[in-house]
Length: 339
Image (cartoon, rainbow, N blue to C red; front, side):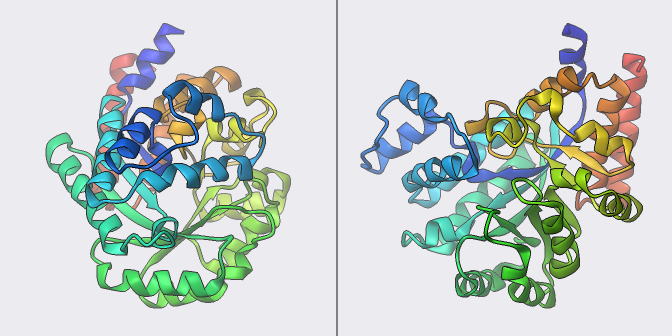
């Protein structure tokens, strides 16, 4: 067990499915609430952690959006992002592709620019001081209407140099990909790349529709793909990545226990599978914890783990040369560890 933990700790890796608002740890939440004079329902770290017991995605989202209310100033978004970067620096994450949800904040009267400036200032510092490269992806909240998504896209247009893509998150049930097909088409027209959450609580049809209707290059979650052999074969052939989040899936009862997670089955089917933490402050683990707990539950070999790490770079938006450099780094690490 010690060998597994040590191997994962030293393994270079990228994270591709991370909601920055989902990294708001209880300690920072309380600090920001005090700084911004916001009264909370849960007044201590212990009470907050006690509240982080979810039976489904909506239970989590209710607490997630309530927690985001403490984020008001540019410095709040900086502190949030910097805390995440410091955490992953210790976990040997070399590159991260971060989601942020503008509508969560603009609906509260926070300016789009305030949110973006705080996050991007921290990302710049993270690259310069910690050596962590990054890409930023803006997500639409799928439970909101198309009009809200179009307004958010319009606000993002002056910042194409900072935002590389758009995504789709929030409540999957009752909000199929088709609901946002037109805004995704417009985003593509404006030069944004597209990703989408699908197949987490929804069916394999949502995964297929995300590919066919939203023209995504990467599926966030995608667990349900395992239930559709033809879809799995297609995604494997096209090497459309899946950004899977095991501990999130466990916390939200997407899987009853981690031993039932489809990650290894999807790998064995030839899919480009990656491991990520999703909303780690709420789901009990950052990226290393996801690697370690999943490896234990599914009896992954060290070779499987190194493949997942390589996949994390292969599925990223880094240049091909940067990817090759990381493959070599991983091979060198594994050779030293005698994998």
